Amino acid sequence: MNESKLLAATREALRHRPRTLTLGQISNDTGISVRWLSKISASDDVAPSVQITELLYEYLTKRKLDV
Image 1 (cartoon, rainbow, N blue to C red):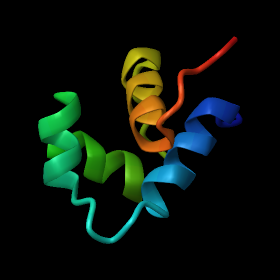
Image 2 (cartoon, rainbow, N blue to C red):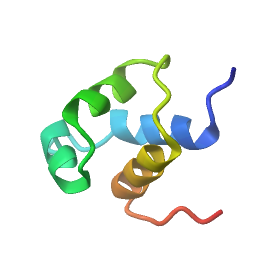
Image 3 (cartoon, helix red, strand yellow):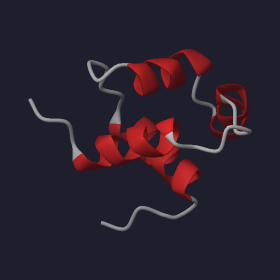
Image 4 (cartoon, one colour):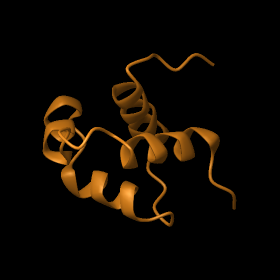
């Protein structure tokens, strides 16, 4: 199955975040565990829930998802 556009965009934003923005900081700010953030970033085999993906996308891009 193909990856959703939202998940692909979120992974891209996570992989290209500022170097000063650590997974620990993202975790503290969003409540998403560092373990999940690591998995999402490193593996295309992991499919997080829509809620996690949306939260992370909005956090990293600093804009609300408008669908």
